[in-house]
Image 1 (cartoon, rainbow, N blue to C red):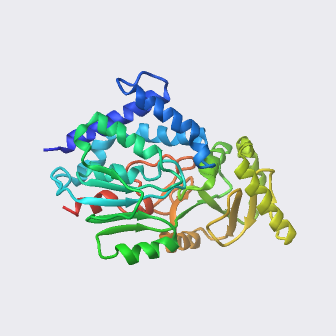
Image 2: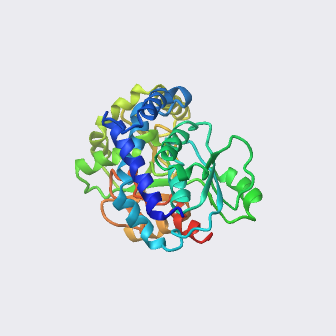
Image 3: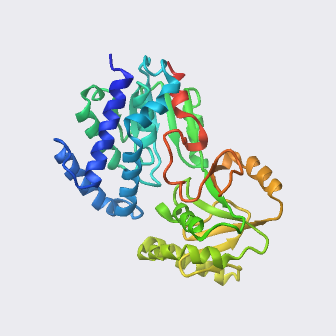
Amino acid sequence: MFSLDQRITAFHKLGEFLSDYLNNQPTNGLDKYAVKLDEIVKSAKNHNGWFTEDNVKHALQSWANSLTNDNLTDWTKAYTPAINNADDKRVGVIMAGNIPLVGFHDFLSVLISGHRFLGKTSSSDAQLLPLLADVLMQLEPQFKNRIEFTKGKLTNFDAIIATGSNNTARYFEYYFGKYPHIIRKNRHSVAVLTGNETPEQLTALGEDIFRYYGLGCRSVSKLYVPKDYDFDLFFGAIFQYSSILDHDKYVNNYDYNKAVYMMNNIPMLENGFLVLKEDEQEASPVSFLFYEYYSDENQLKSRLAEKEEELQCVVATQPIVDFTVEPGKTQSPSLSDYADRVDTLAFLAELN
């Protein structure tokens, strides 16, 4: 019997390993894995130019913070006894690679719920998760026959969790629609400003915009602002993020996109490292942030509610929709902050 308590303990120990690694502490017999992890962290940018050491370590720290005994117990208690007596299904997981370890939550969810994990990593993020899986299996040998990665076609599975774009979602629906499934599409995050935000709140919003270079579904890609909003307040508060220009790929996007807009005489605002453009779309290119004016807060609330299927987070200082997040918090989700807001653990519990 491989109990839920044993699974929680193993992931808690994995969190301790990550904390020890990040704090340059001894890793209790796991030193060879810490050395390998350090190699992967420092070379990640060679495999994916967006995976800087700082961003990879931020992702690791976020999981180190989440994988505590208390957090894991609180998260899973609503799903017992179903996941304590799991029926041991084989769950295929197709992962994205837009930000470091973006597939870890699915990996955790499948295994903590008592099922078997069959994973297909993105070529953009193919090293981190398999290494953490090796650590987990070392910490708890009962996971050894429950974790498998494949580079080929997924076969012999009972359910599917697949994450991709709107285009790949159609492909996933065609091939996997007959199985129990979660299929995720493109999502974006936006921020609603009132003009009354403090400089500290606007600076915190910068973390939501610039962390992972804006490539995550929880990254803010658009601002909703009141008429006559003073963008100088915003630009002043986010100036400390100007070091983002140290990243070549970001600069290339900034220079190219700005040049295209200038050649086409498209109005824009910019501060030397971020371009603002008035646009009704939610998804902005790297180094750009779209904005849209609003005049009635109730109408804006209704519009955001209508766009719920397209949005992951709405950042605001006061609750405006059910999925409102405080400035600076989008990239530090809790265990129950599910991608596409689809309860992964409930889905897995129902497989039993």
